[in-house]
Length: 249
Image 1: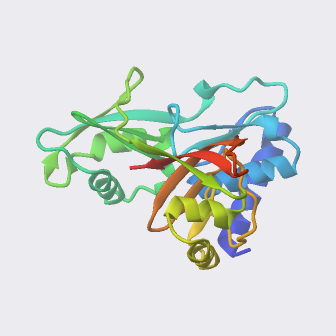
Image 2 (image 1 turned 120 degrees about the horizontal axis):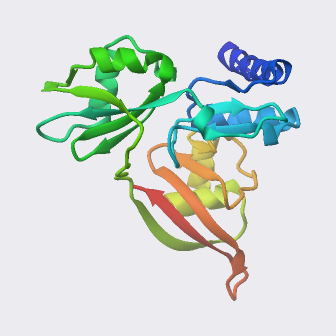
């Protein structure tokens, strides 16, 4: 375990202790997929999974905060210190990288920023309440285009992400079998990718070719994309496992 991971684990442990000691919910900064998976593992290890709630400002956010709630306090997404900011930009559509680059130029820490969802007239971005006012006051340009930012409470997200779906079969739920299906390569080539550290399950690197994959796991393969699985219960006449694969495009 490197120092950064050790510090992160210690931080999550402290959130759990503080939430129960102060009888008030405690919140992390925004977490990426790998950090969220690590936080889930720590909650399970402490036998307090039911006290943890992940939320990023809206449903289906990739970057989320962890809220740890004392047992006597109901979990509520309204408690999260997250602000939604509508950034309006006239002119041609810009990319996620354009928005993130302009925000980083303001010397804002990445962990204070959640998802950036592109919209027809700009973007909705989620940020920690502590930096929301600063962003609204100082974010005047995205790339070469002028911008106007304001916090909003009533918004509708127009998510542009799409998923391609296909059906395939595997002999078992071993990671090398699953990766071969997702990559459309041989099992040997899939094993090489796993051992090279190119495959992540729920955001965490996995080097074991024999790791058993759960149908609900999220799998990312560098160079091939992000995948979701569905199925696992049905088998073909040749006793192969039937899976539906969805790839984010």
